[in-house]
Each structure stands twice: as C-alpha cells, then as structure tokens.
Image (cartoon, rainbow, N blue to C red):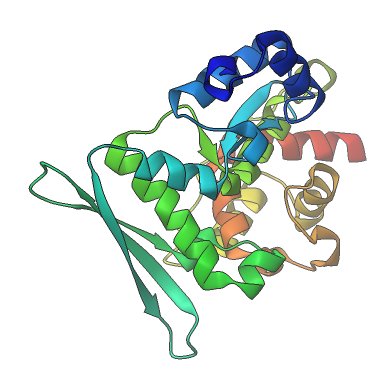
Length: 257
C-alpha cells in the first residue's frame, strides 16, 4: 500500500493507526491492508474502513464508493443498468441491477426489495431510490465478480446483532433452552412470526423490548408497545438469528428475576 501511495511505510503505518484504523490491532490492521490492496481501495478516501464488532475484532467495510470502484476496475466489466419498480405512490418497491460482463453470454441480474432493505434512518427515509440503488449495486457486484471478504455499510447492522449475541457471557447465565418448534405462521407478517417464536419459547414482548433497548438492535424499541410495532426488516433479521436471539432473550429474562 505504501508503494501504491508513494509514502514511507512506517509513516503510513503510523497514520493508519492514528486515523482510519485507530481501534485495530497491528494484526487486524495488516488484514485490512491486505483487503485494501486486493481490491485497490484507499482507506483515506473512505472507500474502506474498519467496523469494530461488539464481540471483538474488526470487520472490513466497503462504502458504496468503494464498491463502485471495485466494479469499474474489473477488466471484464461492460456496464451496469438499473430498473426500478414503483408503487402507486411513487415509492420504490424493488430495484434490479443488470451487469454486463465481457465474454459472457448472459448478463448478471440481481433484484433487491425495499421491504427487505429499508432501515428507519434519514438516508432511507429521504432518499429511498438512491439507497436502494446503492444496495443493489453492491449485491450485484458481489455476484457478478465474486467479491469476498468485505461487507457493505448496510450490513453493519447484521454484524452488530451477531456480535451482541455471540458476546454473551454464558457462564453467568442458565443454559438457554433449545429452540422449540414454531407453529406455522400461515402467511402472516414477520412480526407475527417473531411473536410466535418468542411466545412459544416463553418470552414476552417486554423481554424483546428490553433486549432491543439494551443491545441497540431494535431502533426505537422504547417507544414500541407490541410485536406489531417492530419494523419488518428488523423482524426478519431477528428471525434469521433465531438461536442467538433466544439465547439473548434468556439472558434478559434471567436478569429480570
């Protein structure tokens, strides 16, 4: 990286440690530099940065500018097109990215859906088309060219959930019960599935709310009154982390006794 940036290696190391990779150990910094060199990314331009996982360690996160750079730097990249499907009110329902790759008979087409991606943040609320397009660009680029070892900015929330769950001190807690079979949701909403999972395993909404408030994994949890208030994308994320969620809820329930 020092040769690529035309700077003295020791000075670059010191600068990285003092700025963009301040919380990384020397070993983690080396791993991040390897990723940056692999994809020709510049951390000083915020194309790549370190995300500290709550369970310990550092995860390399690539911004949308970095993903775009990785894409256009591919010699076989031959253009990308975006197509939106919108609802009656003009809000985006889905975005499809078509990436053309030289010497391939068929382009790569990836679709991302708004209800699976949207988060309750200012960028998503104010610029939904741009945010959904950015998410689609990252996922389509990953599929088209096999980018690995990196995550995009929107995936940090999922990392956060996993880290909170795996960092639990199990020695201080009673053993979590094995997950019980959840009755079919009969096509109900993710919120209904989440409620069925919690209630069947002996947890109330108060337990889920406390977990969300203490861990930060359910934004605005303190203002919610029932499972139905949990945002759809959050409910789906929690359902995907079923075993870890039940373990964390058991911790909350034990602490309340």
